[in-house]
Amino acid sequence: MDNNFIDLRLNQQGSQGDDSFWPSFTDIMTVIVMIFLLAMVILLLRNMELLSQLRMSIESEQEALELVRTTDEENETLEERLIAREHEITMLRMQLMRMTERTEEQEAAISSQRFQITNLSRERDELESKRKLLTQERDSLTSQVTRLNRETSRLQDLITESNRSIDNLRADLEQANARQAATQQDLEQLRITLSEKDRELLAALSRSQEADEQLVDLKQDYSELKIQYNKLLRPARTAKGKTVVEVRYTKSGKYFRIDYRGPEDKGFSSISRKKLEQNLKRLKQKDDNLYVKVIIPKNSGLSYNEAWSFTNHMHQNYDYYYQEEAEKERIVE
Image (cartoon, rainbow, N blue to C red; front, side):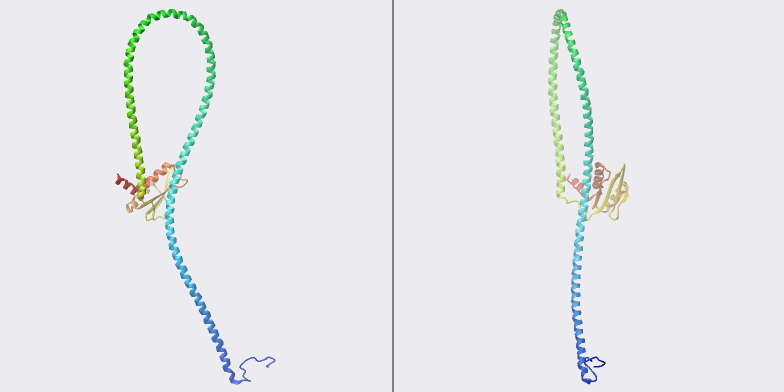
């Protein structure tokens, strides 16, 4: 013991001498080797974990690239569907405007009919009052007839005397009747001839009208069949691979507004009708695959005829789909 504490050191200098140095050194080196081996094991495990994370990171990156590629393809498909749906929405809006105009016309017709019903009711009341007046007049006339019957008896005597004069005139009348009968026969013959001519003319007009109606029906059937035939043979209208031009058409009061966005424009800009025509002609000369997207907003202020006329003009003159259709119709004709 040293100062009341036990000396627990293995290499005590005083008691054991120099022989205790090497066992202590061996213990220290053993501890150092164990620490080194433990550190190596930890590093190996850490490296294996990092390698596993690196592999998972590479696989995640590959999956992300595949997902990006799939998303790009889906976006292209969705964009085409969106353009097609916007075109359908535009056509449906024009149909809605047409139905709205028809509804307004029907409401105007209903108002006119109500006004007519009011007039008829007023006329019915007037006729009822006239009927009452006529009833009073009939009663008055009945009394007058009674009075006239009395006068008739008096006049009967005068008629008897007049009959004698009539007998004298009857002979002259018979001669005149004979001449009239001959004339009447001639007139009847002419009337029969005219009736036959009228029947023949009506029959000819009827046949001509039926032929015209059949011709109109045949032309309509031919137009419908030709449209269906062209639709069966031709692919659907699509903006894929085309030069897309967007035209928004609205009306404020009595003024029309045209907003235009070209293939290289980032947004819409107001443009005149003349400038729009010039831009579309220039683009059409550069590229025949011109897709003209006409946008009719919901509250555009346009009537159906105005919206349809503008849309039809744009498509028929500049859109690739309707240009091909017109070319095929000329070839068929």
